[in-house]
Image (tube, rainbow, N blue to C red; front, side, top):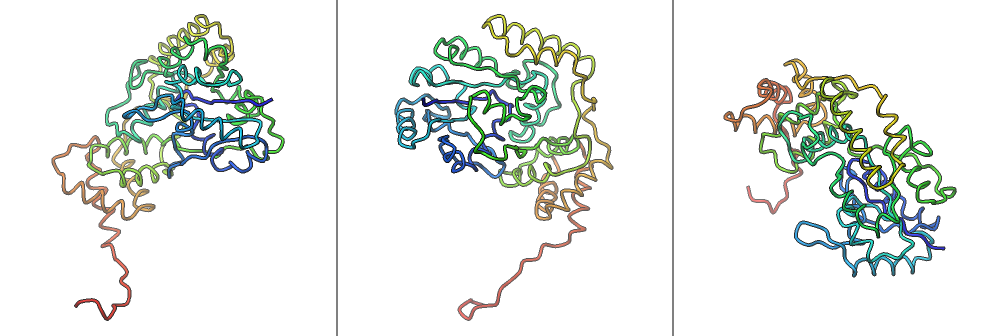
Length: 363
């Protein structure tokens, strides 16, 4: 019997990592009887997944598309595979509309993350990508609101979704098989015997605290998309500063942990869902990560700049140039100007290799 599995997030639950695995193993999946439509992945390993397989754009949003759904189902039928596997966070807001046009055998899989971990991950991502410049705010309503619950509640309010939905905890200690990918396959009842190695490579790595602070400070500059992307890549490799930390002060953590637990409990009661109870139990006793305030010394700032200069010489020169061109811009860490100027000076002038002069070139 054929099956259809639609993995729709929630946000900040490792969708980029599993989509990177799926997109690079399309042929292997097909040999195992799993049809996963190919999609693009950017240089950071991030994509919209299979959003275009079930939806179409309407302005800046994706909306459920009967035409795209019919085409994807036809391709699945023609593939000869027994399972259609689709993954995209963009499905989440449109799940009720998608469900109306899917066959009854379609199942939806969603993962729910610890609200406090989601809150910090959301902040980290905003500093990395938007770009955000303000310090972290320990409040449930900050940024996108934790958990993306507004979309989850809308999905659960739809009988067409709720009757075919599996809600799983996004917590490594509770993953069947040891990681998100093996847990997803187990949840979808997909046989993995023919797939071989199911280890996941890390995608869109979180910054160390020092890297996060330097990115936040540099977000006030007009760097442009290309420089922002290069800076992001180099800061993901930065080994300086704590990599296991929290920005939530201990007093706020205790308060927010209680609020988060209450919300998860209310979700379970409202929709008669007990699959998140093991996560609630673990989170109530899980110790907080070491707290670190968002403050770097001048030596720490200089060390990160020197790391950037080591791995990105042209980037260092361009940032130093932009800082010199905009003395009016206030920086969270004013010593960045001197650090980048000194690093650029040590690198010297950029040389450009010139090939042999052709006879038709003008002098």
